[in-house]
Length: 550
Image (cartoon, rainbow, N blue to C red; front, side):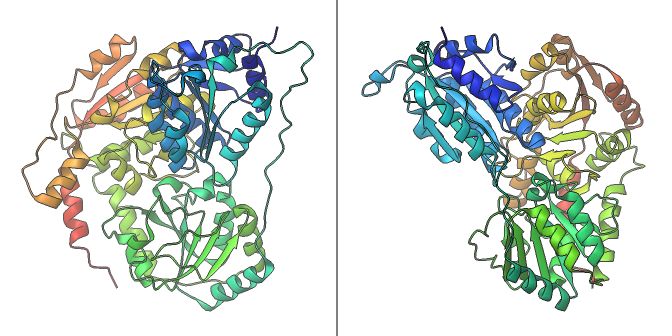
């Protein structure tokens, strides 16, 4: 006898689901039982937040919805942070939760809360399965909505009563056929206006956002920029959209203080934004007077913002739009001022490359990390001060090789994210760059990685405090810091307790050989690196006294 859960799982198989990340619970046991004979791999995690982060990173890397599973009540609430992160970072995710007998909805009931209402503000769409007949439609819609531009999270609640229903032998319910997403194109009149504007402006900058990577439009972006000799800056989440080795790459932007690259925006006549979301970097930081002419290239019309009023909007498939513009243009623009800024950016990466100071400067850690990894290896930055340094100075040469959560900006994402990254890219080296604060938020997923036989490196910037918040506290209120310090376990022994490898760097000269050793091991390896975050305050002084070179 086939159950409603069997049908649900068949619908997931029809969507091409390879992994479901999550935890079993009493109210989703029928669903878990249906997975027993499925082609889908059920990755049992140690916490629902870890499961949601794995689905988040899976979706970001593949463009196909990652799937996470939890039971009702606390299981569902534990998913929330990861689901919200996926939704704000535009990663396609389908979350599935169990639920109790809905006949008790009208009164207080064990572990019951209204999960559908709870997920409403953090998803593109979410629903409750009210009867078995709607399962094919609900599953198809959840994946379609999650994956359509702009992607995000959807949620399906499947109660234990529906999940365990036996379907009649003669039922006709089956998965719905899925098809490719629709492709739209900008209006020809808008192309003409955009081309005329590009032709008549000389000082032009392209601002590339995460939508370029989602649309697999990085090559198209490079060709358009090169044909017109227009330099490109990218957001934190678009690192690699323009390879850092390209002479037209300016820098990664995203700091709320004025950075060197923003000097170029100050001088520019025209900004061409491509696949750019406000959650990545608010327009008020690069267009504070709202006096820049803007061409908006995206899959969706521009959001309303007092500092962002595009003159022209080219709405449609981003890759197709860039290819069309490349065919129709060929203006060799000159903006010599940017060359100074590009050189400053390169110097920022190299500033401490020969330093032997210990604890180690964050720039030095990232310089050495870059030189032991291949171009297509993957770095996942957690959230903390190391994220600022990774975004600002670590060069990315290919799209989706530096992953940063900067919409919801969630601590604890990179370790479970590394699990998903390694499942998607088993032949690439994967490094989770974390602070000691973020590490212990989801370190239990080391066991998940070990059980799956995965190998990746967890690089811990160790300063025994919430370094980024201390930096902001002292900048805002002056010193000394308050409520920022904590004590860490012995990270080497902690790794060993999971049956993994722990390595500690005790002098700067050992950093490269230690990283090389860790990357060569077929294991989950923690590398504990004491970091000198006095560089945070040097950055404050540098940016605070910044006078744009003319």
